[in-house]
Image 1 (cartoon, rainbow, N blue to C red):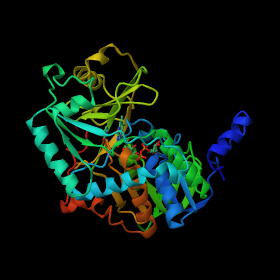
Image 2 (tube, protein in one colour):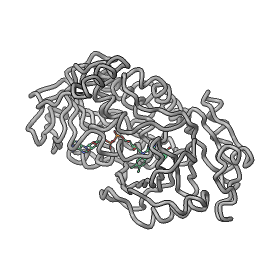
Image 3 (cartoon, rainbow, N blue to C red):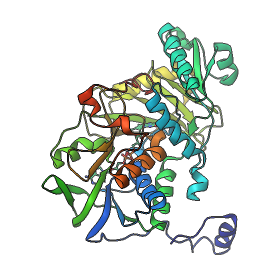
Image 4 (cartoon, protein in one colour):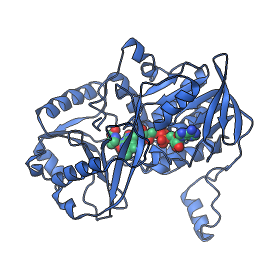
Length: 417
Ligand code: FAD
Ligand code: PYC
C-alpha cells in the first residue's frame, strides 16, 4: 500500500534525498481470473476501477492497458474542464464530474492541479451570440454558472487579445464559466491509479487485449498478450479504439475515429490567466504552469489512427490564434501531437451495456471527455456493479440511435467536427 502524501512525508523524504518514496502503484502480473476487468488505462478506465473499489466494494478488479497509463488521449489532451453543456442530460453528467473535480485532489491525496481559472468561449458573429445566449440561459436554469460578457468586459479580462482579430474574427461577446478551468492530465491518471491500487486493484501495463471469449452471448473473459484472463464482467474504456474493440466482440458502434491535435509553445512569462475557446475558428488556448501556451485545433475531417493530425489543421489554428493574439506571432512551437477521438453522430458519449452480456462500454467522448473523467468513471462503475445504468447515464445508452432520442451537443462540444 502506498504511503499517504503530506507535508510530513515530504520533509521525511527530503531528509532521505527523496530516495525512499514507495512506488505509486504495484507492478503485477495478471491473475487467472477477476470479478471485473477494465480494458483501457486512461483516466476513464482508471477512475472506473477506483470507484468500483472505493464506492461499491468491488475490489477483485484489473485494469489492462496496452501501453502505459495515460498514454492515450488522457495524456494528449488540452485539459479544459467545464460543465456548460446544452441539454439537461449532458449538463447533469458534466456537472456531476465538475463537483467531483472540485474535491478530487483531497479525495485521491494526489494533486491533480485542478485550476478553476475560468473558461471563456468567444462569439465572432450573430449566430455565435444567439447560440451562446441560448446555452447560457439553459445552464443557469439548470443551476450551472454561466455569464455572458460584452467585448469591453472581455478586453478587461484578457488585455492581450485583439478584439478586432485582424478583421476576420472580430470578438462580439463571449460566455464565461468561472468554475471551469484546467487540470494536470497525467496526474489524473496517476492519482486514480494510485488510489485504485491502494484498494487492491491490479494495474497491468504493456498488455494489449486481442479479443474476447464469448459463450452463449455472455462474455467469459479477454484474450491478451499475457494470456487469457477470465472475468464475468468486462468494461471497455478505450476511446479512439472503441470501434476496433467492438468489432472484436462482434458488434458495431455508431462512431468515427478521427485524429485531434494539439501543440505547445516555448515557455513565456504569465500572460493568460484564463482559458480561451473559439468553436468558430477551431482554436483554444491556455497557459500552463510551466509558461507554455497550450493550443488545440479542430479534428481532422477523415477517419485515421495516426497520432499526429494533419498539417493544414494546425496551420489554420495557429493563424487564427495569431489573429486573436498578434503578440504570439513571435513564439516558437515546441511540440505537436495528436490523439484519436471517437465521435458519435450526436457528439455525446455512450455509457452502458452492449449486445454481449457482461460486456459494458464507455466511449464516444469525442473531443471532450477529459472534463468528464471523474463523473464518467463514477457512473460507469455504478453501471457495471449494478448491471444497469445509473440515472445520470441512462440517456447515454446505445439504444438512443435506434429510438432517435439523440442528445445533440455539437454546439457545446467546443471543437468543430
Ligand atoms: P484514453 O486516455 O485514450 O485511454 C484509453 C486507453 O485504452 C489508452 O491508454 C489505450 O492505450 C488503451 N487501449 C486501446 N486499445 C487497447 C487494447 N486493445 N488493449 C488494451 N488497452 C487498449 N477533452 C476535454 O474535456 N477537454 C479538452 O481540452 C480536450 N482536449 C483534447 C485535445 C486533444 C488533442 C485530444 C486528442 C483530446 C482532447 N479531449 C479533451 C478529449 C479527451 O482527451 C478524451 O475524451 C479523454 O481523455 C478520453 O479518456 P479515456 O480514458 O476514455 O481514453
Ligand atoms: O470539450 O472543452 C472541450 C474541449 C476543448 C478542447 C477540446 N475539447
